[in-house]
Structure formats: structure tokens, C-alpha cells
Image (cartoon, rainbow, N blue to C red):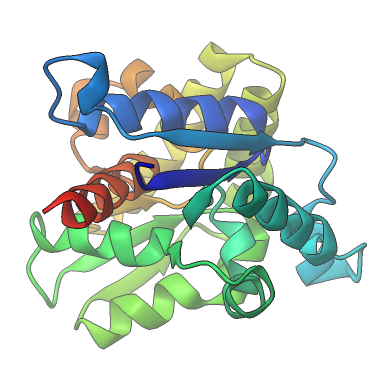
Length: 235
């Protein structure tokens, strides 16, 4: 039986599909058999992650644990979660799920290291929950980067509406708002910008080339890390 990757998805659905596409794109393959065996649990009814972190909303943890257990029963031996905010519960998911989880922030920082030297200023775009959780900022600081984020007004007027547009499949509207948010970080001397919400890279190919070139796609970085995991299992 090959080593199977489990994908805890649905947060949101289009972001899950984007991850799966990038997983295929990042896999060196000449035939079907060269690709990673994957089982996907995409349940959009998992409670909203930012609301749980910021406003005392319903915890998504029980539903995510149930998803990991379902994936484990289906044969998964490791987990990828194409939702940045969900990694707020990373330690609890590891303990309760009983499977290794490829951490999206570690993957994104590995991708960043190949593009921006330590000491650079890095912009971070994510949900308010991800920013409040702090795991990206902690990793950036540990590697010698400075971190900047958009103003509260820009988060409310640009980033959060862009995420909602993606959830409604209004991708042109999302890309216009996201492009403005990235440009503002670049104006503040960001040498790179981590797209740390998996809705945002969905519209990366719709951004102007100069804007897109600044971005580190955390979703693609997660896919790359999963390919490395798979190839390590095969070697």
C-alpha cells in the first residue's frame, strides 16, 4: 500500500481545489502512477476559524479532529491542511489526530528563504485570526526577518472583502482588492509578501506580474513540502 496523504479541506472549498492542483503541478511525474495518493475530506461546515480565535465563536477543533480521524480510517498516514488559520490548533490536532501534519507556515518560510535574505522586511497577508495567532510572525522573527502587515483599515476594506469575494467565486473583484493590499506593503519596503490565507493565492495569476512576483504562495509552498514528504517516503 503506498503512503497516502490526507487533505483536511473545505476551509474553503476553492482553496482546497487550488492546493490539489498545485500538488499535482509540483509533483515530478511522467505518468499517473508517479503522483501522490491522496484522500480528501472537504467539509465546508467546519466552524469559522477567525471567529473562534477572535470572538469566542464555536471551536472548529472537534470537527477538524473528526476530519483527521476520517482521513486516517481512509488510509492517510500524514495530513496537509490548506487553511492557514486552522494551524492555530496545530498542536491539538497533532495530539488528537495521531498523524504528522505538514505545517503550512514552515513550508512558506522555506519558500521565502530561497527568495529573501534574513534581515529583509516581509509583508504578511492573512485573516485577522491568522495574524492574531502569531505563528507566522514568530517564525519570521526567528529567522531574522522583519514583519509588516496592512493597517486595520486596509484589512477591513481590502483583505477581508477579497477573501469573501473568493468564497463567492468573484475572482476579478478579489484580485483588484488583493493587488492594492500587496502594493501598499511594497510601498512600505516589503521585499516579499507571504499570502498566508489560502483564498488569496487563488487569484495570484490575475495580479499584475510585478505584484505577483513579490508574493510567496503559502498554498504552493505546502504542496512542495508535501511532495518532499512523499519522495522521502519513497527513497
